[in-house]
Length: 73
Image 1 (cartoon, rainbow, N blue to C red):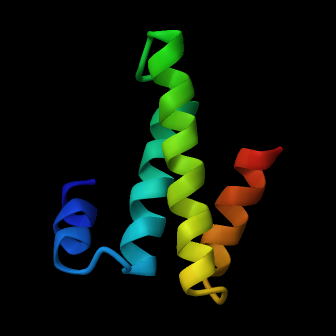
Image 2 (image 1 turned 90 degrees about the horizontal axis):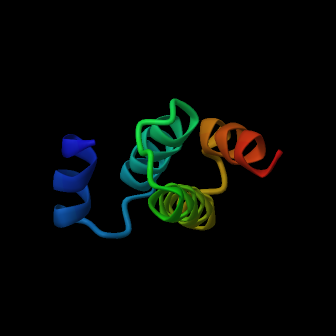
């Protein structure tokens, strides 16, 4: 997550960094690392936004499509 944040600090439109951050955030949500229901909802929304933004910037990111598909399901 830290590396993704650094990369996004250098280039806020880095599709790969958005994908990594979105995927890491989503995995945190899946693992239930956050206990507060409102924070969990925000976490899921952030993951979705990052993954959707990554795909908008680079539609060839197959793993971002896969993770987003799982999130939608």
